[in-house]
Amino acid sequence: MKAIIKRLKKLLAGGGLIALAACAEPYDKDPNEKAAPVVQQIILRDNIEFEATKTVATELVAGEATAYQGVIAAGDFNNVSVFPSNMPEFQFNKLIDGDTVETTETDKLTGRQLGQCGPVEGAVELEEDGAAVANLKTCYSPSDKLFTLGRLTDDGDAILFWKYGSTYTVRVNPTIKDKKGASLAPFTGSFTIRPFELLSVTDASGTPLFGGTEALALTEKPKLSTKVTSLRIVFTGPIDKEHTIFRLAGDDTTPAGATLTDADGNEVTALDKAGNVQHVVFTTLDVKGKDPATLDPRVVLVYHPSFVASAGEDDTGFLPGSYKLTLPGTIPDNGTVNGTASNTMTGPDPVVIEFDVEEATR
View 1 (tube, helix red, strand yellow):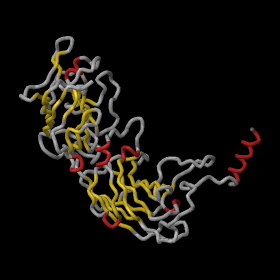
View 2 (cartoon, one colour):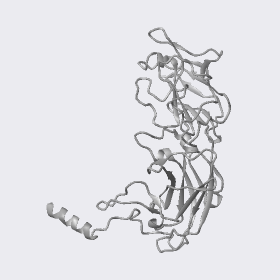
View 3 (cartoon, one colour):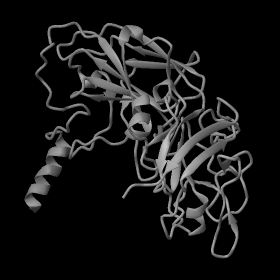
View 4 (cartoon, helix red, strand yellow):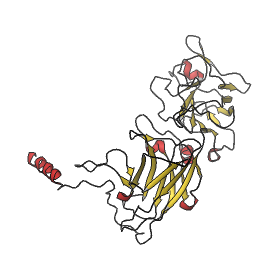
């Protein structure tokens, strides 16, 4: 073993062992190899899903995830409206020489990528409201014949959200070449970022109660089961978890403008074991403990007062009947997206969500 290690060190020192290139994946056969290289289409994905870690994770249900997805022909990618966390992927019509798209430092021994993948100089350019954007990432995937566009902080961390209301112009330049050295046809496209808004409200299983976009719009009054103990609210940007509306379970203050009432307009409350009145609770924590119940920065949970009153010891939830959840239109994001003061969500003020609860069948 010592002899092998000694031999490896000698090869590395003398350049005899070549590390794999950043894009050296075994994709050599291209059924479209004779075509001139072009950007064929743009695929939209959720950046939270792409960058999921132990501190951030996508928790979108099927309908919400679909709202973030899309495929747009290259010729139609002009001033396209996208969500703040939408991530565009630019797909080519054929295999491209990845080393003309991205440059990534690799481990000399294993060939594995180190850090984020940055663009080769001049290959991809991005402007934000007319100003050049530095610190890009352009990760190329030979298996999908596309690169993923994103922004990085000065420290090299991924930036999850585009700035609300900004227009981004992308230029993919002819310095990018295919496997035979043919230059890419130049491409220019643009996309504009939607404001901070309420995307949807569902129960814990994903049954929709409210859809803030055309794709999620409801056609009838939602019906839930008495097994439901909590709801989930999803915004399009990172919420301000320190705002007074998002408080810990057991806090008996009522968030201004946010109420849960019955069909007659009476607030729904419950008494805990000490006789204290508990209201509806908005939180990102697990009522049963202090651990985060959601790692998605766009999601907040709504717990029924009876579940809060029992501190999650039983599954008491919504009783049969008609309910109305009212959310104030003053809910802000956390102020990090535009780098200025918190942004208040756009849309109706207040947002009123009506739903029925029926006895669960056994």
